[in-house]
Image (tube, rainbow, N blue to C red):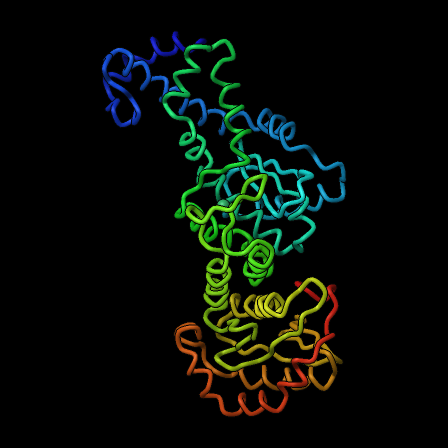
Length: 395
Ligand SMILES: [Zn+2]
């Protein structure tokens, strides 16, 4: 059906039940009939976007791939698909998504209408599985909340919608497809949508069992690579206004980790704290900075305390590896260091949970005299580098 016919068909029912002016922000209402027609086109285009989002996944995937390119590497494609499936299989996520890796070298990812997600090869290369899972979960949150539909609607001004009506030979469907595939380079999320996606993304990826510290770690990489101003899309765009600053996103994900651990585990200045006691500041290893390793170590501990915030975990030290309830938490540079870390954790595990984050009550951590004195004695040893290998991460 062409647009003029659609307008006629829709006119009567819409006139009866709708406040047209709210759908036509840019109407120049000198001619009331033109204004009405414009408003209806706007509504029709909006409805079409919604329909494509619900029904045209395959078509959108094809168009988006055409636009971005498709990375010819099945191993990399499988790695992404597995992560998407694991998150999608949690009961938190309702829709089903198509995901693929595109060859772009920027650290980026995006979701477009139809539940089609793409991750740049640049992000696949920079992130480990747990970090990647958080980025994927953030995008899935945009899809679950239909943020993309709203964003695409926003970029279609009434004027553009009217021009479709004038040359409607292509039909609204392909018009919407074209808008959507342009959209991937310049997504239009609001600050509050971004914050919602970070919040929900955290919930989704931890529900799938990924390391609760990797969300902060993924944001550390983003901050270290691009600075504070960043937004998603196929191509990296500096955008100070509509995205939360990346430094804030690191800290916010640190707070989420603390909450997730039932207020037991926190990272402060690259150092892991347990029940208010300073435990360890890991050394940088390979691609992992001190800060990233602290979040990853804290994430492993947070997982234990999330399941059971009350009982006291069993601490064991075997060689250079410190474990809690038989889960390897950290591999230290030497057996001696591992013993010291194990002792500190042992001293801290019996303490009660904090009532608020250390970030706002750092003095609480000073109360543990024992922890502090051990800390002083061993600080230099523990700051020594060259401890764990990449294989030790996120197990
Ligand atoms: Zn986002």
